[in-house]
Image (cartoon, rainbow, N blue to C red):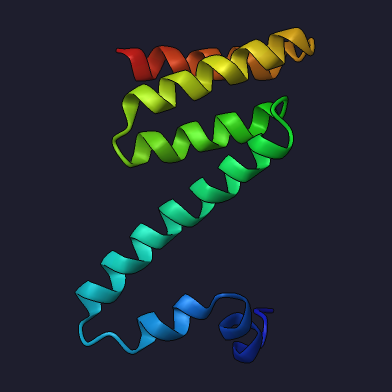
Amino acid sequence: MPPPPHLIDYHYPWIAYIKRLPTAELRLTLTYQLLLTTPLEDYKQAIEVNPGFADAYNNRAILRAAQGDRTGAIEDLQKAAQLLMDGGKTAQYQQVMENLRRLQR
């Protein structure tokens, strides 16, 4: 069950703004941009708080790749791989390395 609309508008004030935009195309474009940039900032903050958070590097790499920042995505995947290997998380390390190989093609 989705949360009540007043809670959505409270926690995500940009949704109310988007609802008032004149065209569906503009609403969709702005929503897409916000969905990519808002989490990117969240991951940046998570990494600042905990530089050893491999999942944050991996997830930020996915967002960076979606935005066309191939170099940033590769750097994040390399850092995630290093942290996972150092932490002995072999299965996750292998998945990140596969993602890295795909991105470097």
